Image (cartoon, rainbow over all chains, first blue to last red; front, side):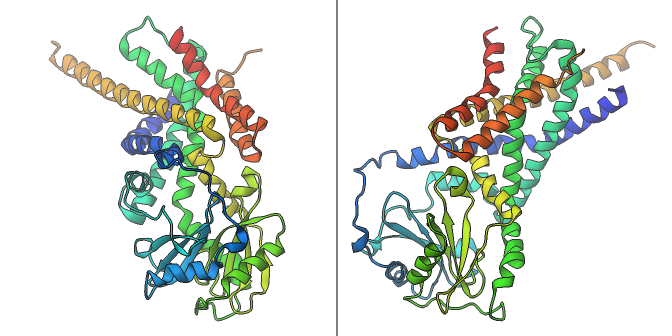
Amino acid sequence: MKPGTMRAWTKVHTWSSLVCTIFMFVLCLTGLPLVFHDEIEAWGHDGPVETWDPARLVTLDAATDAALARQPGQVPIYLSFDVDRPVVNITSGPTVDAAESAMAFQPIDRRTATPASGGEEGGVMDTILQIHTDLLLGTGGMYFLGAMGLLFVVALVSGAVIYGPFARKAGFATVRHAKKTRTRWLDWHNMIGAVTLAWAAVVGFTGTVNTLSEPITAWWRADALAALTRGDGKTNVAYRTGTLGPAVANAMAAAPGMRPQFVAFPGAPFSSTDHYAVFLQGATPLTEKLLTPVLVDARTGAVDGVAPMPWYMKGLLLAQPLHFGDYGGLAMKIIWALLDLVTLIVLGSGIYLYFGHEKRRRHDGAASEAAPA
Amino acid sequence: MTRHPFAPVAVLAVLVLAGLILALLDEGAIDTVANLLLALSLVPIVFAFRR
């Protein structure tokens, strides 16, 4: 590589890293407990495995009505299903397109049509997730972190480019233990950065994709769902009790072997103005994540379409597990956490190397000015 | 034949990506293979630390 090209890549690496490092620190630190959020949330809640008779559960409509009775004046937006207990989680709001901050989340036990545990908000894990998602700054903070994720990927690529000539001289994964402190940290920085390149690039890129979930979903709604919309596309069909249960049953009959993961009510971001969008999932980790939406007419209960997700929605859905590392069991979570920790070392050593270099440059500059001509 | 200095990094990256994707496909034995491929990233670090 020509010296000029190398200098240019080094500049790209330095500045892309410097801008994003402090935010990457925050994301790595908050991401660490989030990797184990299932285990942390289950901690202290070990009870017997729940059993229930499906025939004795209240209908989905009755559960929705029970939730709405506790939030007068609100309309249902989403309904999701717990896997390990007969609980549905109803998200409601003043309007079906309400902002997330105005939404209420209520788990309802279908054995009794009463509130179940799990609806508490504002815990430590919620705050950590919010910092990790948007730095507590809302949508603007989320897009900002998405931009930082892209800069992180640029830093990784440019770091890999300038690592090549170094590896040719020193050898792959070499740390010169006998050299001075700065050289040792440079070697650790280069080595860890190189061997974790693929993982860090995947986590950084999928993090950026996740920050774009709102515009991607809006695009999907305008692109794929618009063709199925029957009304004027502006007036939402209001929820009527008695229509939800049959809609979910019809959706499941249209896609045998799949189970419902969540339902978006008419007008919700994941549905059209006149459909229940019933999102079904398969049995393998892949088909569990790649949801299949079945659009059911909210007026008649007829299935209007089973629509496999377009590529960009599949990408968005796969970006979530690939970012959080929660799809390969506890072993994967532990490896994820270790990779997160070594990434902190790369970030810290990068800052140390930059400021060490700057200090030496200033010192050399001052010495040459003081030297007699 | 001279080996490109970036070759080990590229091989490691391909194996790790394979692990990340394999774990999405199925559970059980494939999960174990996927986790082992992902853990390969940490092996050079452990070796460098112990050297």
